[in-house]
Image (cartoon, rainbow, N blue to C red; front, side):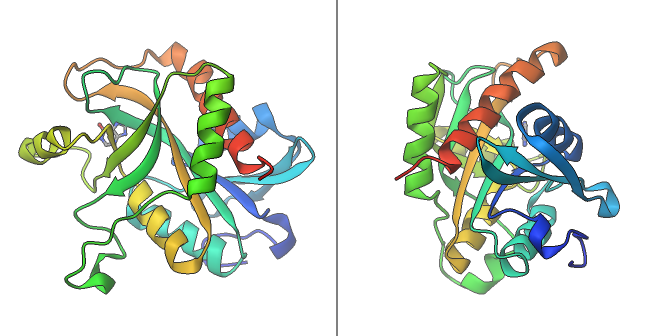
Length: 236
Ligand code: HPA
């Protein structure tokens, strides 16, 4: 039990999927896991533990933005000893060839600022995904013929940005999409020697203004959850 997670020690699995939205955690747990148990509802940030293919999995909401994710990831890592953390979420597409519904596997996550920034002083740390998880996710995605892109993303603090020039620089440097959590997740995983990956569905596009219709969301998000689960339990 921690300040923000009321689960018993044994009720959190070694592998945790982290959607931003707590209701998406509920949907994913009820859709993909068996023996589902609600393990956290502090502040409405729902967490569930169940079984997938014989493996114990927790799906815990992270909330929106790096400060929120950082609270849950710190407690999961340091208090519950979680070993594998996979963010499942949405992102805004940035390159013209990245389409709505495509899946982005975030190899790196560039950021201006994160809760960890202050400890690096003059260093620009490069947060990156766990290579084993990333390659397992690529194989899982290819097996189901999902349309994926593998590369860098931008973890921003600001959804309603007034600085479109920053987006322009990201696009110019090949960044695939923008979201608000992965850089802090990757940095914490690096600090504590854990595995992390972000599997993201493109829900809107910054250049074209296209957006995923609400009734398409479930099917598209399902593919992302399956890729995350298959990557987590891929036998090396
Ligand atoms: N910006 C930041 N985060 C996001 C976006 C976006 O456009 N779309 C989905 N998550």
